[in-house]
Image (cartoon, rainbow, N blue to C red; front, side):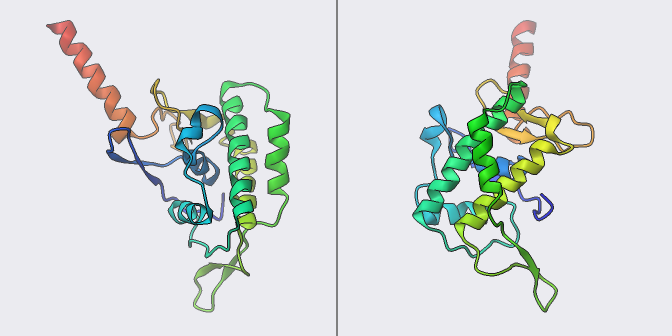
Length: 200
């Protein structure tokens, strides 16, 4: 997680309204691209260009110029689905699914993106980064998050109809919503309506 700069993602509600969502970790940004079971309908990683576009939106900085194959897109989807199940089990306090942990660990064991410094003192990525390097980088970020000091702060949004996962890195540790401007605001509006109906 130390090779990552805070960025946040622009997501869209089912009504098409844009809002910012910062899940707090690269690996959790991946979970917004689809997932296993009912989340399959949100799939956006269909081809190499899709994975490159996700990397561009992610908190990786600078955006790596990646050479991505179709197989590497499939590898990232496999990692994402395994990570999804591991993270949800973690949030619920359930045992991590062993097969999914193996998938995360196997991906993390591969060579990751390697940072380098340009002659001008700027950050870049060394060598010729591939989709496999990206998969390994995301997997290592997941290992760091799930075994690190904020592991107990991985949560799902408190809204009943929202399943976004984030890590609460705020100092007080009281974050409840994926985004205050989306689910937080919807909660405020509902609470206000409930108060008005009680008063009426």
